[in-house]
Each structure stands twice: as structure tokens, then as C-alpha cells.
Image (cartoon, rainbow, N blue to C red; front, side, top):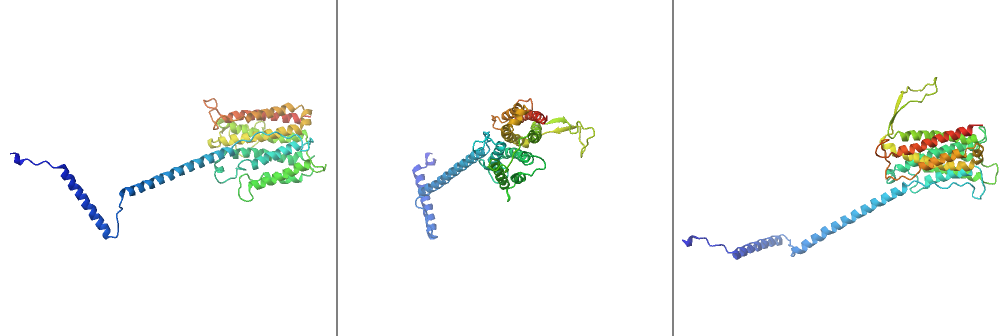
Length: 379
């Protein structure tokens, strides 16, 4: 019965049939393309190599684009870091450029140098910028505002007290220009811009400083009296007290309302609660911190200048040590920050609270300012 068995297929024959079928299909495809005026690429390997080269080219340019973007981001970060650095505490000049000790020159010179730094530091004045990358920086503008407030206060005192012998004396012509120019809004970039107005104030203050040391004895004056210094310390006292309270409010506190304490017949425009909840919003904590740092930096320089200009007055009142104690507290308040960010721990919690540390230094400086002012006001 062996003739009923199926003959096993021949592998060689099957392979030959399949090759013939593929050759026939390729021939039909070529004929169709020739009939339509087209042609088939003669070398499929070459076509595949071209496709691979195109893919590699696209991948190469994608890598180059990524590297360019990374370098740009690093450059922006370095630029922001450079612009956000806090300034060094420079040495205050105690004599005029010709070597003469001139009363008032140290204060006027320090005031102009501080204002010049604010306008011409790396990155320039940032508080009114509306374009990247400076628009994303908030620490340096807060620092600038703290400096600006102290510059405004000292310029106002210079106009109203230091440069005048009495309340009915004529105001200095340059300080009449400088004081209102500095009170221009601090964040305007349209014409007239903030920088333009502050530069106008700087030019006027430089003119006053030059007149203070020129050969004309009746041109430019500075009166280093105890009552004048005490008048400026009144504004300093208020600024430090406010900042220390705002810094302490970083953790939130419920305090008694002492607005009318000591005034039995006093009254207020609006009803006040017996207890007040005082807490700085979370997004404003670092702004308050850097505003306080800017205040401490400018105030430290102005007090060092006052130590030279009011030297005889302070020695007469035996108040030199009191002034130096204020300077010491402000120097500690400007110690370098060892953390990459401003920490806001809860009081006695696990993490530090930089706002409370700064508040303690400013509070001690505030108390020392009160003592110095009372000492100067005594006969």
C-alpha cells in the first residue's frame, strides 16, 4: 500500500517557486511605473542609507538645540545671581577730597554714594523693570526699597533741619529739588521714569555737596546740632520699630491693641478690637526680610557718617558709645546668610526663622536709638 503515501515536498523546489513569484511581482510593478512615467529606485539600500542620514541629522540638531537652551538657562541664572548680590558696607569718608575735615561732608557724600549705588549697580535699578530676567527678581527690589526709604528720610532731614539754622531760614536750593524728586513713585518705567527722577535728585545732592566744600563761605551749609540729629533719629526710630514688628509677624501672633494706651481721653477714627491678629502673608515674608536688610545697610552707613559730622556734639553729650552700639547691632543684622533660601520656621520649632533673628537685632537697635535720642534731648 506504499503507492498511497504522499511524496514529501522538495524544499529546493518550493524556494524556487517563491523566488519566481517575487520576480514576477517586481517585473509587474516596474512595468506599471514605466507605463505611468515613473521609475523605481534602483538601489533600495542607498535609499535606506539616505533616510538614516536624515534621521541622524535631525537628532544632531535636536541635541545642539538642547545644549543651547541649557547654556542660555545657566547664563540667565548667573546673571540673576550677579544682580541679586547684596552690596558691601563701604568705608565712609570723614574728610573732603582735599583732606580738610568739613562738617556735613561725610553725611552728604555717603548719601550720594548710596543713591549712586542704587541707580548704577550691576543690573541698574530693578524695581521698575517689566522685562525678563529682572522682572522675576523680587529680593533685590525689596532691598532697594529699604534703601530708598532711608535715603528719603535723610534727604528730608537734610532739607528741613541740617541745612537750616532755624525754622524761618531759607531752604537750600539744591535740596528743594532733591527731596521731592526722591519721593517720586519707585516703580514707573514710562517717561518720566523713576531712574530719571532719582538721577535728578542725585545731581542736586552732588551739587549741594560740591557747594558745601567750595570757597564761598555763604554757599551751602550744614549745622551739626543735637536737636537736628535727634530730629532725624525720630524717623529712624519709627522705621526700625515698624520693621521689627513686621518681621516678628512672620510666625503670626495675637497681641493686645495698645494704640490708645496712656491716653484715657484718646479716640480713633474707627473702632479697634482689644486683640489684634498680626501675621505677614507667606508670599511677602522674604520681601519684608530683604526690605529690612536694605534699611539696615543704608542706616549703618548714615550712622557712621553722623559719627564723624556730629563728633563734637556726641562727645559733649557723652553719647558716642550709644551711637556705636546702634552701629554694632546693625552690623550683626547684616551678617552673611548661610542658607540658599529664607527660612520661616515656627518660633521654637525644628527649623530656623531668619525673620525672627533679624527682628531681634533691629529691635535692639530700635531701643538703642530711643536711648540716644533721649540723651541728645537732655540739656
